[in-house]
Length: 136
Image (cartoon, rainbow, N blue to C red; front, side, top):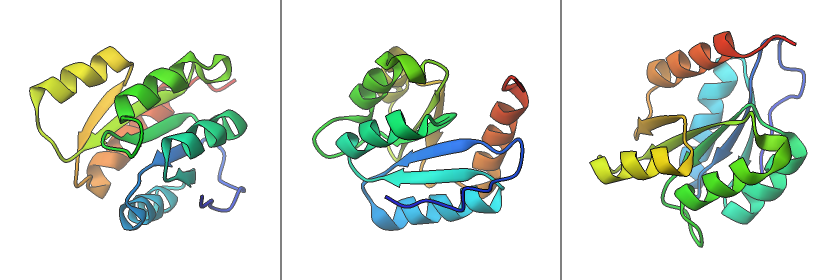
């Protein structure tokens, strides 16, 4: 698990990156940090569940293909936790199947991104989410 400096600027999102590929997770974290947001990384679904309960992220950026549990199932489990009802889930996958998009919607994902996720695409999505987030 990796964390950025906890002194993120006001308005910054708290983002949980769930990605089993360590290099991809680190690259995503560097992009998120450059955008001014705070993040933690979990490499397994079990680690993600424990981290999410303690961290209470605004956004969970979840890889669909995870070891031991799919990202679809992980999203369902996260959304079932009382303290994470307001956490927005974003699916990430390299697979461009319509079935994946439908399954992501059914699992409770709010957004769907194709890998590789580019800085501008992720930044636009997170800026939109931050703007829609209540300020209280």
